[in-house]
Amino acid sequence: MHYDTIIANGTVVNADRTFRADVAIKGEKIARIGKGLVRTMNPNGTRIIDAKGCYVIPGGVDVHVHLALPFCGTTSSDDYNTGTRAAARGGVTTVVDFAIPYGDESLHKAVDNWMAKAEGKACVDYTFHVAVTKWNKHKHEMESIVKRGLPTFKQFMIYEREGWQADDAAIFGALEKVRELDGMLLIHAESSRVLDELIARHHNDAEMKKLGARLHGITRPNYIEAEAIQRAITWAEVTGGRLYIVHMSTKEGTELVKAAHKRGLKNIFAETCAQYLVLDDSVFGKEDGHLYACCPQLKKRPDQARLWKGLKDDTVCAVSTDTCTFTRQQKAMWQGDWTKIPMGMPGLETLLPIVYTHGVLKKRLSINEFVNKCCTTPAQIMGLGQRKGVIKAGYDADLAVIHPTKKIKVDPKQMETNADWSPFEGWPLAGFARTTLCRGRVICENYKFCGQNGWGRFLPRKSAGHL
Ligand code: URP
Ligand code: ZN
Ligand code: ZN
Image 1 (cartoon, rainbow, N blue to C red):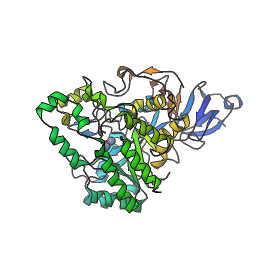
Image 2 (cartoon, rainbow, N blue to C red):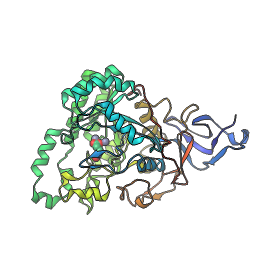
Image 3 (cartoon, rainbow, N blue to C red):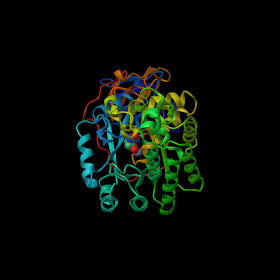
Image 4 (tube, rainbow, N blue to C red):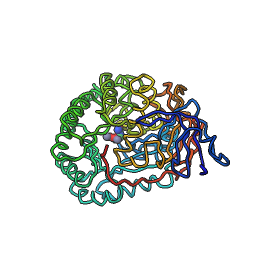
């Protein structure tokens, strides 16, 4: 058999094992995995990529990104061009974005809008979660949205100002609906009424002058997330609907998920994001501390430690980024008022390097656990497990070649993201992709993007929440 590409001499890492092998690719698929394929196969015309001394891992699957999202009075500045170029350079080959209706739009219109943002631009594969923001209207569309290949829905417990907020009745109803449709409900869990009260109490000139961006942290104590997670778990427990807590950031939240698992609940899942594992709220005291405002905000070191432990013991099933990039100029909209900071950070390009460097190299995770949390489980839980997240014959040839120790300093000038800053600027990180392939095509080589707009394809899915 003739192969188009062979990744030779590398150490292949899957979630369940690590082994020396060559990976042969035909067309868009992994065709064969074995030793000495370059020697035994006719290599004429086959592209050989030498991965000697490197890990060959499945392409990263970032199940939480917001590209070109209108939000906080502006639009997130990484779109499907720069955002997916950043993904390629970071070794991420699949992204899952959120199609969010504007105003009274239907769910189908929101999906059409997001399809249009991605088509012709995306350099890696993509799909969407669909945000149910007007329950009484949108509930009638959920079945046909699943038929369109989109079985994951999202509700926000906050963001009243954006018109996105869902109340408890809507969350309860949506969980019943996803149970019926074999889907899953993603929840942004923060307790909005108490959060609004805390913001109102501190929203005065004297405190803003004195505390600046620190107020972003001060007004969102851990119980704001914990109470909301508790409530969401209660509704999932009584309805039996599959619940996935997005961007979990607190130790209390992690304990609540753990307790649910201990009670035997198999329908409760939680992700965290790379930033909550390595950054804490001391950054808000920096001169440019407002740049780090995201939602939920960065917490404290004990929260980081609990989240790492949660990854290890499977309380936390995935690491994503919640990429929602705003440039320095956009962030400057705050003018000293923390409630006006566009919330979110760049992250796609640094997901694998952060988790590899601070997880694997610091011995918090094994190399297999790293692959499991950044590639295999995110693919599987979102209904992509038949083709993504594993290095196996018949699977999409989505691969990243990473050097085990070579560190590169994070420098926004060298990056593909449209951000002119990085929360990790100056950090030396290993785990950047030396080479990335998406469905057999090399999209990053020698740490440089070399992909093509429009290569990325929409990924329809049947169901979600099966691990
Ligand atoms: O700060 C963030 N995370 N912005 C995006 C919206 C969200 O809540 O995920
Ligand atoms: Zn959110
Ligand atoms: Zn988000």
